Length: 102
View 1 (cartoon, rainbow, N blue to C red):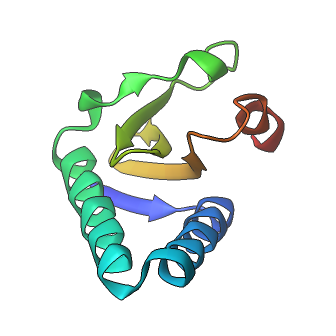
View 2: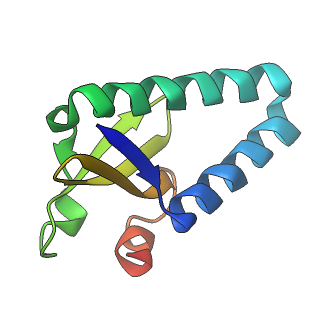
View 3: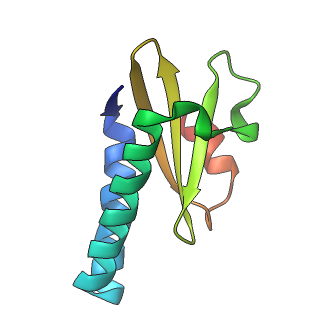
């Protein structure tokens, strides 16, 4: 399946990537990017491997999520032959931020 990132998801991912690089260095950033790529590959092959996102279960679309690394979560929606990554969330943030952003 084709995987597309929303502008919102891309922005939040890059903000986290910049923070990781500035605080922990290039090696940590490389690991973060590798973990992200692994998860994107996983959902492109097995999209139902993501759990239904409980914070968004009241919404019309079936939002799914995968937690990876220690504090990272990708939120996505399956649409026919496309997967749309709609947000990236650092799980240390207040959960209500997710519902406010989507």
